[in-house]
Picture 1 (spheres, rainbow, N blue to C red):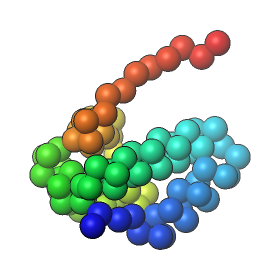
Picture 2: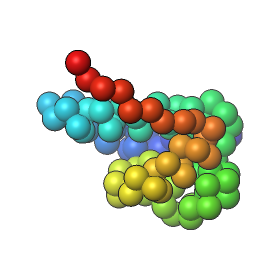
Picture 3: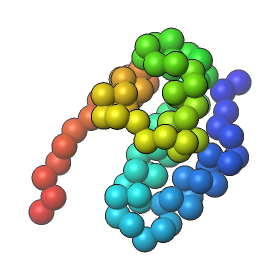
Length: 90
């Protein structure tokens, strides 16, 4: 059964509560995609195979060991059957 390491959740929580808007937004996005991966029953290896990224890269993204390039992040979310959208702030 797919799962998310407890340390990853702790790091996401800390990132999302440091008072920096960009970190809070990234933490929210990351938590959303991690939850979706688990809900879909996909392992990191599954996402790696679908996306063409390495399992190591998926692990590094999810554990915040690295901040992926936009291109790699898109490959990651597309593997989860997600899309992206830019919305103008008002």
